[in-house]
Length: 261
Image (tube, rainbow, N blue to C red; front, side):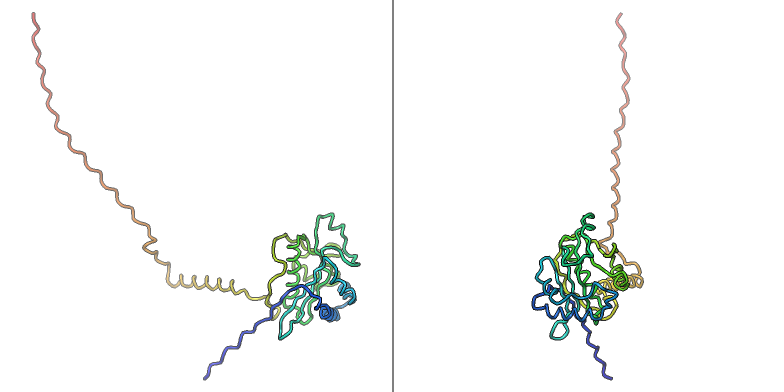
């Protein structure tokens, strides 16, 4: 019977993050329209897209970061995520109380927009977007990441709270320490399902420890090498016996002379 060849390993696509270019504006706008068509506007009021004119104007403004998240499937990259953030209050957004942050010596990075492709939700893209925004806040000297979530958007609140966000009034913020790192994170492999990606290095270390434990139980304690054994202490040499003393000479009797008269 011919043996079956193992099925080729399935390689998951990699998410790449980059800054938006002018040539991307039209396709990003179409992506945003598709994303927010599936959003319940009564539940997530703030997530409704702006007009296209306003979207194009934002690209020209200073102090705004527009990040694009893509995967490569086939010939052309596919947009799966978009994030927009600013270091100062922009536009007509009035949900941000600047004095609240100034009085607490907070330097926030304001998240204006997050959009995830509906066909790729649950595969780690949202977590990667948040991680990139936190990373950008750290390297730019910000102390907090600030974004707005509607109070009745239970799914979004659960997502952010699971990532250590705290609620303050109408906003949710997260504080991180400042470190010196590159601004853009390296590519990441996309998950095939809702499961967490495997950790091959940790698994390899665990297997090595199990093999070592099994071997020690099978062979008993390992005999020490001769070179590792301590040398036996040499017996001290006996001290030489002292030579016998010569015999003592007998004392001579003293003669007494008679005194002269």
